[in-house]
Amino acid sequence: MSRRWRTALAAVALATVSGPLTPLTAGEAPVAVAAVSTATGSTTAAPAAFPGAEGFGAQATGGRGGEVYHVTTLNDSGPGSFRDAVSRGPRIVVFDVGGYITLASPLHIASNITVAGQTAPGDGVSTRGYQISASDSDNVIVRYMRFRHGLTPNQNRDAVGIDSGSNMIFDHVSASWGRDENFSINSSTNVTVQYSIISEGLSPHSCGGLVQSDGVTLSHNLYLHNKTRNPKSKGRLQYVNSVIYDWGSDAYILGDSAGISNANAVGNYFIKGPSSSGGPFSRANANYHVYASGNLYDGDVDGQLDGRETTAADLGPATVESQPFAFPPITVEPAGQAYQSVLASAGASHPRDAIDTRLVNDVVHQTGAIISDPESVGGFGTLRGGTPPADADRDGMPDAWERGHGLNPADPSDGKATDATGYTHAETYLNELAVGHER
Image (cartoon, rainbow, N blue to C red; front, side, top):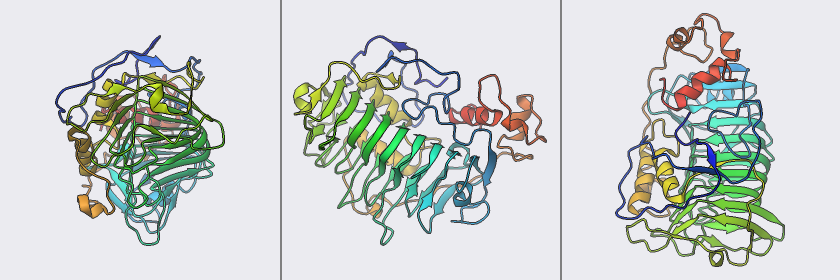
């Protein structure tokens, strides 16, 4: 079980971190802390999308039991391409190549897909140049992927966009350099984005994302260097243990709408940076109902992490609730500890690339700024490829791993069989790989 998934206790403890900021090493394990659920609830017999999946999208099954598709080329399209891999499901998508996939047009992820970016060899994998969309799709799992848009001419789009989607979870994703928003979720249901980095929306728009949906969980994410919408929320939102750094005019926008919205905002850390002007919450009205607890705000940009707890006054005219809304159970850390957890492992950190390493160090040192051109901060750089482990029967599980687990590396059907954990054997391998047990 991953370090961040602990047994729920009865109350939130508030912790702060103060003193000089110290850079974290990628993969450094945060100290275990007491965890809580923001609402009570019962578990189901079916396993979650993967161990540690939480929130509204936790029960997505993706491509479970479907075809295993090996991405074998960095080409935009054709056999073995990522575009072909996600064009139909049910599929579990694994990568035999690492590096940048330079897209020639926007790419759509179909229903019943699992994208296992943790399988990419070398430095991992990223798309570049165009939007990634999961609009109108259902039942999607995406892990350890990078989606970097950039200044593609005539493409004023989100880096990642979901419209009218359902039952999805994005885990350890890095989304950056969107021309419109970085990661937007509109008119959708049961979506989780967790342990992800949503960064550097490009000016003049420079937005983290619109989240206007009925049931979204944002947990342990890092929003940084986005002028506004970190996020802008309408509908039902579970906003937990995220770090928001160096917004411009607006950090978390509370509705700004004539419609009713309900949100739990718990254990988040808001840290002003060189680009920041406004406070942690903005543009609320009485239609936005929020339960807020254990959120910290560091507004002095003095090189020390010494946030104070936010108050009802910070929330402005929002309707402040005394009890959390009955959203799905979720693990909550104190905000100070969540800061450590997010900086240690958010984004496609298996392994973390130079872009995300730079961004995390911006938070640590309270440096950086909102940008208009990726080249001003070093551009896309390179991602080293590598050699995947041998998989003779192409079932998504390396031969050595199969032999070590009593499976037959010449039998392509055994990956679809369910093991004692409730996952298929192929999923168990991917789950272990994500926490570093195997490579």
